[in-house]
Image (cartoon, rainbow, N blue to C red; front, side, top):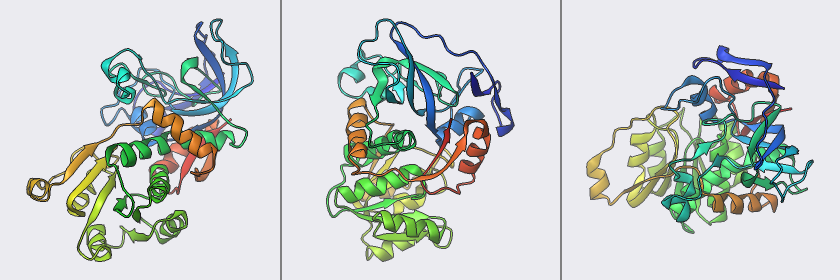
Length: 342
């Protein structure tokens, strides 16, 4: 089969579109023909070996995969060849204290598709049948692949961790990202008031079309000052943070007393300066959030299937042009999801 492989970590030049052996499946596995695979910054970190991500080499990235079952293992009972499926983002043990308590997203033996095991930047991918979800007829492969990570992660952040409530103010950073797009829709579903940031007026206009109440061009003005102006010096109840070093201080400063900052990522760097006085004096909570548990993933995918949430597709690239797709994502040109298709 054809796949996009890197044999050493580093720049885009290390991504090679080449022939590799089609995976052999075990008794509990399925082989899925990839039709669409979403891109994430995690794919970039995995290829670079940055942000503490060290995939085995050689490696095939890609963690959001939709496709058709091409082959099933001899103990698999609930699936048939030809079914349209979405692959869950990780393989978990199902036995540890975290899995048994509903926190399988932080299972210590968790294997992320496209990071710890080979992923979907290939014509075929082998996965355990237990992590599959059926794609309803109402969704295309592209929409299915674009939905799981962004909406699952944003749901876990806003609903489970930050417990965003109706009429609260939420600041959503980088609204043009796929997770920003998801967060706007989830926040409006909860009845919150949304301030979105983006680097261009065009992206802000699109964010408002999705429901954002206010937009701030962070390339043109300090978003912390804009937040205080919009909220009449009150500050926001929740900051949806996933940018990292370049925004961290302003994010903390944008919170009202008793506000909550929830973070799932750090694309601009892992280290942020925190005003400790603000944390204790204003009763601020800083909440970490990682991915989504399996129950949340299934619930969010049902919302997508019912068209309550809508994946926004910016652009698709052929599998052979995965390096170009990653470059496009790194340049932050997109509004919504970037995918490769085959």
